[in-house]
Image 1 (cartoon, rainbow, N blue to C red):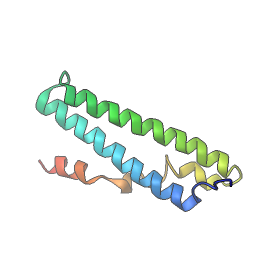
Image 2: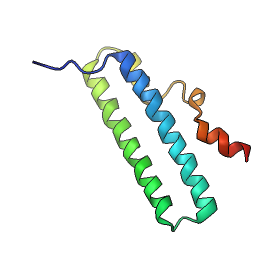
Image 3: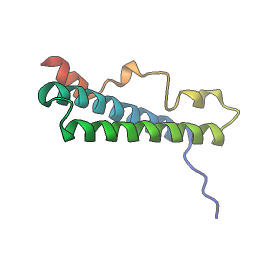
Amino acid sequence: MKKHGFTIEQHREVGRELRRMQQSLVCLAVALSRAYGKTKPIFHQTRQVEKGLAALRSKLDNVVCREHPTDDSVLRCYYGADQDADKPTLQRLFEET
């Protein structure tokens, strides 16, 4: 039985969540580098996880474009619209300090 994959709305929601997660990890990496330096393993591990999320977003972006080749709205599922609205909680926390 062939699997049908995500709906466009599911891709959008996953994209929003992955975008928030990646932005949070970037904020965490900056905070860790300021507090502990860029040579510590915790900084490098955080950057590795962030790069992994970036790769996942890219692969899912390719998937949604293949699954829905005639729908231009899918171009914004993983990159693009609403990125400013997706400000992660972690970013707000570090901005307050």
